Length: 360
Ligand code: DP6
Image (tube, rainbow, N blue to C red):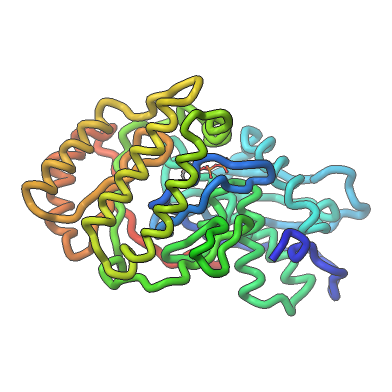
């Protein structure tokens, strides 16, 4: 499919006043997306686990305007309060998706959004937030064209979400999602995420992700600025190749449930992401001292117990601990005994692999 396939034809029905509500999950990448071209095209393919507990719920109320407006007419509320801070990002998003939802200037839109995780927790809400918003806006198209099929709608929701935030395109469906054109992955596209099309070993069912909030508050580097650092980065082209090689290797790892190789790849990916930021110009260290302490304690615990807990990181200091459900008891005990003390005021979120967004 190309961009043109997402430009709708004339709608059989006219929009009247209405509303749509969706809950969309966050996701955590196993192979990371870091580096992009214009129009949110990723520099390499990525694969993520869809989460279950960390979600955004958004309601969009739409009211037809008497006359088509010259610009988008919208309000945004976070936790019931008008939030002007989000307006520029949403405006950019609406501008990017306008060709694909051409009725957006015909309506006033009121966006009400809440997250299950605290806004100040340092967990990015852009993936779940943009996915939930894309799904709500697409709902208007579904009203105007009730014949659109489910597969098309999932692809289009992911396509639209990507234009808000790249990783958001992996927050529409579960449980494992692939995004980015890749020769070994059938049906893969730079334009949208797809449910992982290959075998996934049962050991990954109910996989858990406990998120340790080491650092609350705003990220040191926004993702947009971070992706930009990959332009003219001395190691960028090799990194993009490596990520695509990892995506290829992951096929066998996920199919066989080889947790030792899984751990090696996931941790290596996380450290490579941080290495890219440590070696860009300007350079950044996004880990905190406690991030490192947590990593070392995980390694020692794994050596001592033979369990399969591993870590991954986003572009920040917080640590995601991934482990199979059948090792949960031991790992959770370890988290409370040794790791909680390293998080800001005992902050952690127990999450797990999830099945994707839901209409409310
Ligand atoms: C480190 O999706 O937040 O989490 O497209 O600029 O919104 P934008 O970037 P974003 O980047 C996420 C980067 C990452 C890795 C990943 O999720 O793959």
